[in-house]
Length: 139
Image (cartoon, rainbow, N blue to C red; front, side, top):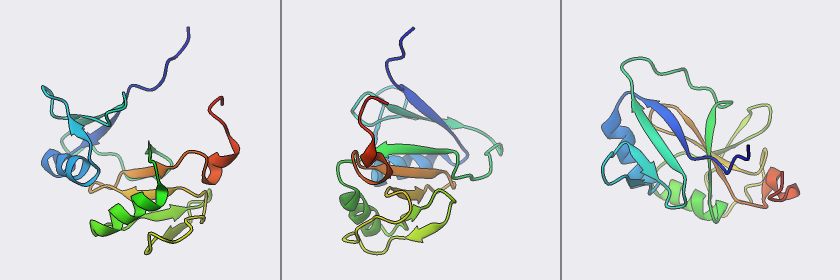
């Protein structure tokens, strides 16, 4: 068997309206034309927001979703302009707040993090930058 890639990730969601607004309006994901709790990146990967009643797991950065972005600095600029609080994080989970999109963004592992409205950790990765600079597409 040969796996071809990741298809989707699911997040347990308590407040669907807030989370849909965040992922569509803030991050730019697109709702599926029939099932609006399925959100696409437009690049063959989806995020499934699964409604739950009071069953959300506690926030844990070790459990996160990573999105690939064209530019980490552009991502930081976008998030800061939306009034959000991105940060960088070390392997020991030490957080480094990002307050300036023109910062080198080389703290921690060289990626960017953000917590969504329900506390889920999101990571933003620019290929060939930070911890990923030493790897190619073959690992």
